[in-house]
Length: 230
Image 1 (cartoon, rainbow, N blue to C red):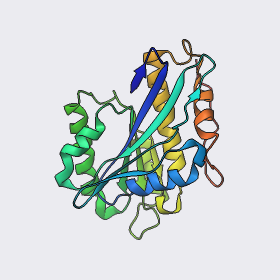
Image 2: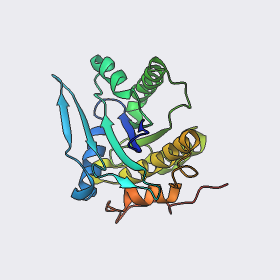
Image 3: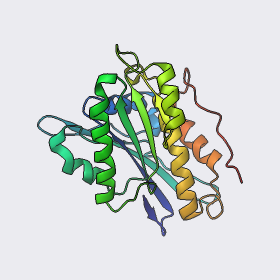
């Protein structure tokens, strides 16, 4: 999180993390396609020899709260290949929220677990304890043979400490719901730290509405935008 007091600008950084080929890049591409051109930046790529990091500014034109606070959201992926752990750790620096993108196929369980442990380790390396950074989990590729069943996904949703979402990112399914879920958690943590509602007149509902007003949500299952409980 970057907060410029003099300019009253808040920049929020969200990172998509997970194994190689789990669908991190596909998530960002699907999001980029659904966001109106007026409210998104270019989808930029930093290539390595065998993997890549993608990022784009979701709101290059800041929206302002009633008190004049400017807000921008930046979305990043990390390279999934094992050899790029140092890059993953660097990209995590300053993250305000993380989407862990897992491959929902049963055969990918061991790799998912390894990268989950890697995420927690790299958060610690960056000075974060578990719980300092909101995390949601997305089980992607639910359309493939051997993927977890709806019943298994529901069981995971009940047991997991983190919110769990299902997705078929290549079709854009579950992508917006995942982002929405993370932004809710991220807002609440930033509100506790900065007083977004009390000091800057930016309640949760307005925060989410301002972000998603330029996003095509047709065909998605976004939850109603809530007011925060007292």
